[in-house]
Amino acid sequence: INDPNSLFGVFTQHSAFGSAHGKAFLLLLARFEGAPLPISDYINDTKMVQDQVTRVLKAMVDIAAEEGLFDIVLRLCYLSQLLVQGLPSSESELCQLPSVDSTVAALMHSRGVTTVQQLKQMNAEKLRKLAADCLLSSGDVSSVPGDNRGSRSGR
Image (cartoon, rainbow, N blue to C red):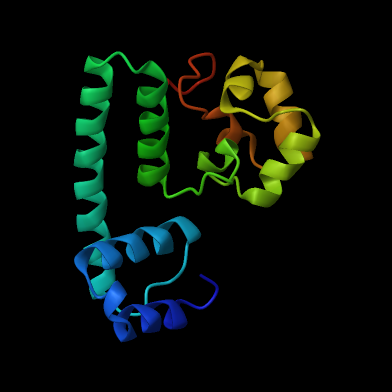
């Protein structure tokens, strides 16, 4: 999706993509890729598609859990998280944190931090050093969800 106009041009020109399913797929793809939407109506459509997909995923989780398919449940939960956050699966999980983009995540990876869980287990001094090394304010890194050690409570 490098050129959203060509993507949505393809959508409107070809009857194979003219269905609601094709439109939903393209809207989700644009969300995951961070592509700008050519018209404002697509923003509302994307929100509606996301709400519906979330409901379908929850139903799938219920069915998989009832059948005892734990691995499938975990994968569906992961997919649901990606959908809500709008992160592609190729993106580092660190990018879900405030002020962390792929460049900062790469710096964190180079320093041995690859997961949010690793951040949660760091003490305040190590977090500040990591923040300084990665050009972040220490407040952004220390606000990792579930961190109850600092001045902020967990989310």
